[in-house]
Figure (cartoon, rainbow, N blue to C red):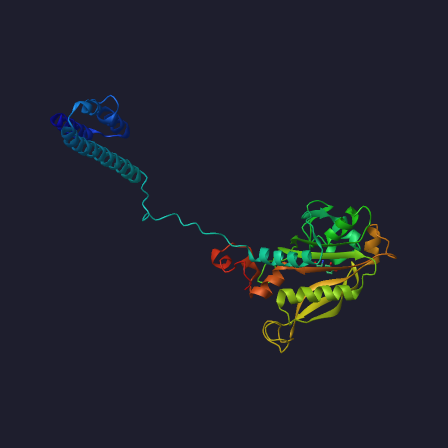
Length: 346
Ligand code: DAH
């Protein structure tokens, strides 16, 4: 019996070495240790042995079962390891390969400034509206109280597309559109940022295409002090908390009274320098109280409602903020210029 057990062991160990996958290991396990195996035959014949023989055959059978089990387990472990290594080898990624470096873009400085202005006015409850860049003579001039004889209506100054349609020379045309669109003639506050066009000769400070933000507030009891407070906040937000503003009487056909607004120079703080041309002040925008004719033209009762309006050049604000001296830099898409602008404040 002992010899029989030894030969089972030798045979089993040889066969285990030939196993190459989990299924063949399972087959060998049931062939040599299962219920119908030669090993279990030997075990069932043990009953006929004397107590001494039982003891010694029992020891051998334990040793044989343990040896076969251990060999099966070790082989299975080796097979699994081999499979894993094969998989790792085939899935291998060469992390030393150079990757494609993707440069992320930057927001254009004019976009940064526009968004900053939008954020400020949104925080004060204004709507931000968009309008067409091609508009009618009526919306750009007539309804804004610009008489037909006004020099701004000269075809030399604007890009006319037909006798009546032109590229808007200012965003003020949106004042007309938004008041006309206001069917119930209810109070409102809005800004309209957008592109504008004029027949200017391009140079370091002029561009035939530029952008503005128009602001318009219409309501009851709107006064000049509302306009002043709003623009003061605007100047501080854009140019620094310690900025002051001053109003200079001016003329725009669509506002009465009209003003040009200067901000105290952020570089020299009113002492006079090259930025403010020695005056201590920098002009930033035009504004005023909406002319009663404009309110009436657009269906608002001027005895009940007042309004204030302002128009600010985005390039102008951006150039002052970022120290840009050539307006063309905004339009030629030179990466060396654009990469200087990140979302953070400069
Ligand atoms: N439309 C004027 C311009 O382009 C700017 C302006 C001045 C807008 C006074 C206004 C305003 O709304 O009230 O030069």
